[in-house]
Image 1 (cartoon, one colour):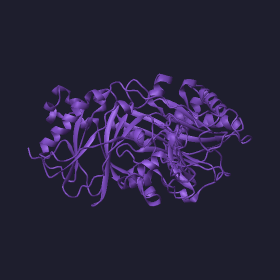
Image 2 (cartoon, one colour):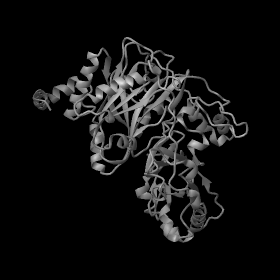
Image 3 (cartoon, one colour):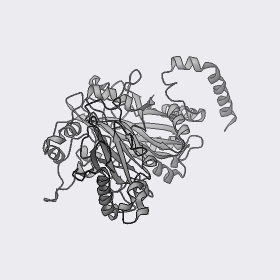
Image 4 (cartoon, one colour):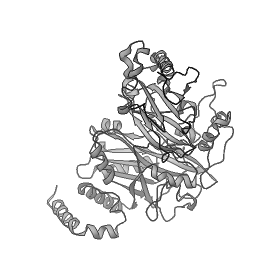
Length: 530
């Protein structure tokens, strides 16, 4: 560090000690994100370099988005977004350009931001969003992703998924969620991925280190803008081109621009299961990252527009169909334990296979082939519920009531033990409100099938499975049961259960859903007979 930079740093430290109260009162971002001084200096150097090169820029902030924030979409949409209840998202909030259309009907569709800032924004072809971050402490997962949030479109009743979800009255609530208009009736909900996320595996592969390091992310439709931002970020003190990561936004996939007709976007972070819970919570409290909107005031058309990126293929380390007989025997053993052989187990469904919950398809690009005709079916517009290629999501086939002494048993394979997941969890979601209210991860699920190990061909393999219960009252079922209070889910309302398997170890993405067995749910009443 140069003598001048050392002196500036010393002065800033002194000023920080005496003026933090004044800054908090005058700077709306001062309490939102507490950046380390070294990172703040990089933000200032980067901003100065941009302005010297003739770019316009504005600064936004980041805030946690949790189940409590579901009150906003519940008021405006009638449902939330299937949040992970134990891992709040980190949402970017940005100011708007003077020539950018701001749809007042969308003001509270996600959250209430600081004055003149919202989480949803439009994106120009010669614009880049630049994120400068001190990454969090080690965890099972970190990923940053941009979604197309809404767009002008109309309901397509010919969509094959719409047809599927219209086949039974029991699917009407899910159809209403997946094929929903936004609070602006001219715009459909998308919440759809535009490509692969930038996750901890990718960061570590490119830059060799990830957790706790300062890294930079560029979100842009223009490869030329990405290159310009990368060069300036790499030129910062201690910078390196390997520390910069680009998320392309293809103009062939989304409608860009600042007018009312353009799509709007959201950018957010998933950070799940920190190794040290205290350190992880400290990072969430501080949120040491910022976001800048940068654009070229002299040009509105991308010079080198990105093509639509291909999703990376999903893989699996183990084909769980080898465990199919054991899983079936385990389900039968649970039924026998409860003394009710008449109850019918209901299989979960993979959301990527069953309803094609893949962002680019939800946006109308490259839908699945017709198995009979062999042609690509028309797709979208569809709400993709914040899909991610980093996970395999499986949803219960049933909706469950809880107020007549029901006990919901979930029996499945544990991806962290079969080698197909970095972490596995099952969450209870208030439905059709789609609010995640509680979550049980693999640490809790591990060993829960031990009571039924004799039903397996090799009893010692019980660790590959879990048997877990959800009920209003878990008396006599501990430790493998979680109570669902009426505060979480009001009396008379229903729930669905979602299983998440994140990152197939040794790969960058979630496990191949065709190699993962779906769990089963079984509804019992009272207590076991044995």
